[in-house]
Amino acid sequence: MPLGSSSWPTWSNWDIASICYFCVAAMTFIPVLRAMLRKVKLHDGGSSFSQSTHFDDEDTKRLEQNFSRIRGTLVFWKNKAEWNKRFHVYTLSWTIPVSLLVPIVSQSIGQTSDGANFFLTLISSHTALLIAFHRALKVENNFKAFRHGESEFYDLYRRLLDRPDTFGEKTSEQINNYFTEVERIRKSVRIAETDNLPMLESKPKQDGK
Image (cartoon, rainbow, N blue to C red):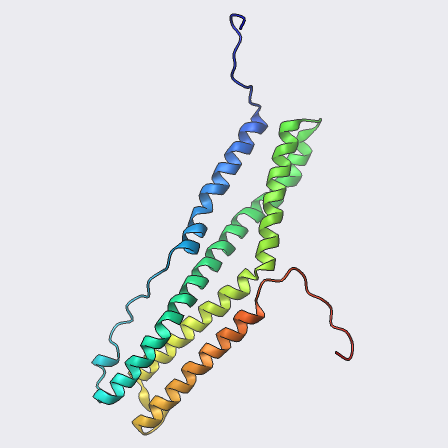
């Protein structure tokens, strides 16, 4: 090797920009990945049925058994809501700035530059993938469905603890009406979940079908 020569590649400013963009995009995706891989814990909702003065031991047992059966569903809803929320924020955080950056970069290239073209391709492809997955997975709709289901259940849960008379006059009627409402919430979230299954495209409906 001749003296004074270097084996290190020569990086242009566009090459450095591409590397920085890729690293930052990957690092900011870590919270989304963590929400996908780990299970979140339910927050302590305060006093539960065992501390309530409105129900006797037998009624309390029925209510606690019902909550134990829906607890796994609540964890699932919370996981899904958290993942969809983080992916939604991640998508917006990148697609909005990049949509403004693309025309600026296009004007700045001026002449053919492999580094500049690669950078433009990188940010455009990243944005296109995010929008495609966001739309196909129906991220925003799923976040609303799971978050609303979780919130609606806890509103119902607290209302039974605080104002059981709003469910009926007799205790048995209150508990049965509460169970009915819990079933309704689970069904509504299940319907929303199946309606928001990932789709590649929506086929137009034909007349008479």
